[in-house]
Image 1 (cartoon, rainbow, N blue to C red):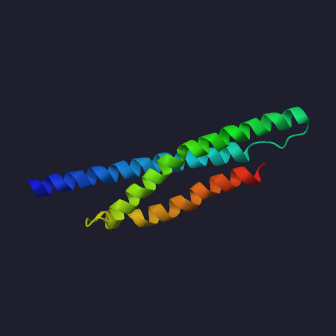
Image 2 (cartoon, helix red, strand yellow):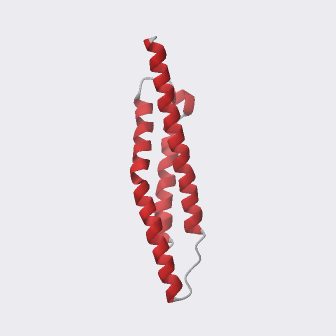
Image 3 (cartoon, rainbow, N blue to C red):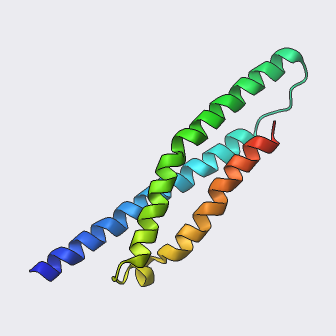
Length: 113
């Protein structure tokens, strides 16, 4: 019975991590689209509006930093745990893929100014 409970807990942790991962990747794609879709300013008023949007995007990116760090920590914990999660979901490759995507959003924002 204890072994079954442990497996259920492991499955729960895996599903929680995968749900968090999907949320973050979806958000990253939305941010890429939002930042990349902005037109260049043609006058002072539109430049001020664009700058304000950039500040909003920066605030949203900063607000998501904790969620990103938590998901990364969860993934690393799953990889280090002595369970078969690595074979089931490839948590190590998910973490490796997540970091560049998150960094791309922050770089994309800073270069689109």
